[in-house]
Image 1 (cartoon, one colour):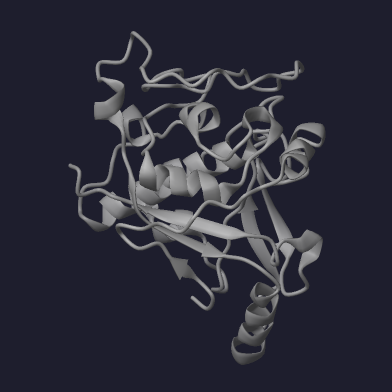
Image 2 (spheres, one colour; image 1 turned 135 degrees about the horizontal axis):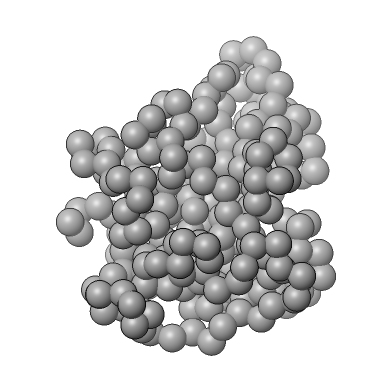
Length: 253
């Protein structure tokens, strides 16, 4: 992928030094910034391509009244990619397996170079999964795993991120350190070069009219939580903004 920077195994790239003002913007406009997933292939839908993981990939979250889009998005993407990696290894997790769902709450409270419910940078969140790992945790409604999400759907109160703790809920049967899972690699793509690369790809391979993406405002938003956004024109700075992701390490099992 053009422009991707790969974190070395023993020396990950440094975190982005996001200003306080940039992070504060997330708290003031909770629905302004969103991390999404996209593809260059016409008609590609990860739920169809990786059918064993369709239920997990298609799960729509609800971040509630907290500027935690960065944490909910990255933990959800980690969950999706973990499932896909295990599927490719011939051992896909069951849809109802809480050990295969990863905690937005852990990331929200403990990830470095972020500001909790006042916003955060997805790249720094991915780096945190590389350096510190992330524990299990489902959404508020399911309420299981080491650290389930603390805020209810459709929240109307502006929440503050809980303090970082290094322990699981008493109902979980694993220690916090044992429950940790890590990214083995972290990737980063940013800048106007994204737009140029996408436009060149369109010229070479034909038009792809839209990107199909997931949001985390529950299923009563958009197309049951999904939406389409115009591709190739940098709509809402969608293509020039940061793209970052990691590769979960399934060799721990």
